[in-house]
Image (cartoon, rainbow, N blue to C red; front, side, top):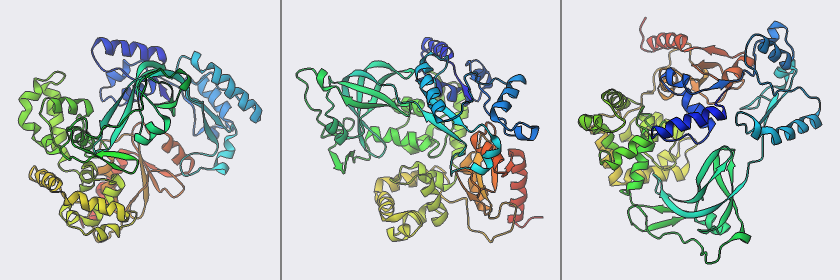
Length: 504
């Protein structure tokens, strides 16, 4: 497990502050971001450290107990956590948990809990796995740290779907290792039920030790003169009337600037077209500079290369990479385009089903709601939302623009006469980092008759393991599932695709 010590985070944030770069909120985000760096020299400078926790093949070398195997790893030079301890009985476990609940703040690194593991590894196969995790170990999470702070303001934001979300702004406070100044208040009913007012003192904790969340108002400390918060009746960004739908309030103006910018962010993210280099900060900059205002504008940025190159933080090399990534995204599968368009209730899985069922954007756009609802796991509500989205003239115009700009509008997974190959009927899981994106690999594999799954189980036939594969790889080994690296995968794919095309 790779982590960033508290001292390394403080040093890194001091350097980023001096350089005018955004600070990392916590060590977990900093470590994850450092590992995702394409330039390994940057990762090497980040002060990351690691613990080795598990030796999957230890029993083959005569080590029955996890503790003995870990001791051996230590002697071999692997860095193992010195805080580990073997105990007997639940009372001893609870005592250890309480000890580290008190001790966690004094450690050189942040922890949000402990892992309690069966020491006898000969029992692992008998104990087995649930759909997601092994039964021979369990994570215990500490109760969240709670602080109090003052609500300085409540502001409204408008997301890509038009949903209006209230956010509390606080006097900055240190909470669970990071400074917190904002937290979502979910919706109007949440604010009313808790009667949260500007000026109130509230309790604050982190849900899952990550997301700041308001607990309760400290009524005994409420200042005189506070008034209940009243939701706006018009959008703070486009000034159109807001509409209540259930517990949520929406801006229904499809041209709202806040909705547009969030639509672009969603479209380019890994939830949609996965355009490398076109992240939230850059999109906001381009939007403010009026170089982007709608999704199709992404594909006209190539005409503004000279302007982009002159912008702060962008050089000729990074602009060229960005434009190459944008151009490459034009060939993405229809499912990625559908999940990026922001159609209500259409995520990756639904987009994939729609793409493979209708095969083209045109066929889906003209489909009757009953035809859409007949698909497995779709339902009438989703079908009506999809039909209504395509009935909107503005959305149809956007799709037409994207087609004109050269984006693929068809499914890359086409029904074909089944040809028996290595992947036929096999259930696969992908883990780790591979040179091709997961959606592209998944589309290629499913075209060959394989079935995608997100979790390793006894029903999994193949685990495709890239770099930095984690717990899925460990579980696959324990279940004796065939593991394929990227090199072998590419050879098998090439052979299977030749068979599919009828080539020798």
